Length: 114
Length: 115
Image (cartoon, rainbow over all chains, first blue to last red; front, side, top):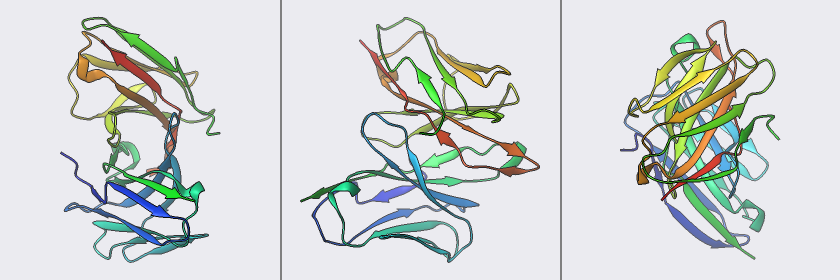
């Protein structure tokens, strides 16, 4: 059972379109991270959001952390074929010497067609 | 490049066998976490080692075990392999210091196939 639910699971769009990926949970996280993973590779960190309501922008990617720190969204503007990949959200609870295990969502597989 | 390496890249085993996967962390990192990623799913936390001791464990049976040694290397051992153990195994290294946790850097993973 995933504590973090991502939607949609799959997304196939044309180059230039906008899209939003959602990450929802009933649990509160101290931070939430977004990763992108390509075939044959490990996840690569895109951003970490820590404060409720926080918005971070990374070029065409906009990340938002919900006010209650239970959900997050990733918005991509004018998607490009190079954005194709598996997008994962991961929540962190506790931390420090208590352990910083990440709870991952099931992922959103994005395909951007030229 | 995260500086985290894993070996082997791919591995094929049969049911009942035992397997050891290896991870080399980034220099200076004192924490290693292992994750299992089944096909089409997100990674699931197996366990974490901090300063060579287990520091948290996910919902995995005891036949999943591990260790961390001072030279930044870590191993994941799985006994009595089952078909459902087929997955990509990821290790991630990080620093826990003064109650704060740094970013986890993932290796490329080991693809294990159990026949």
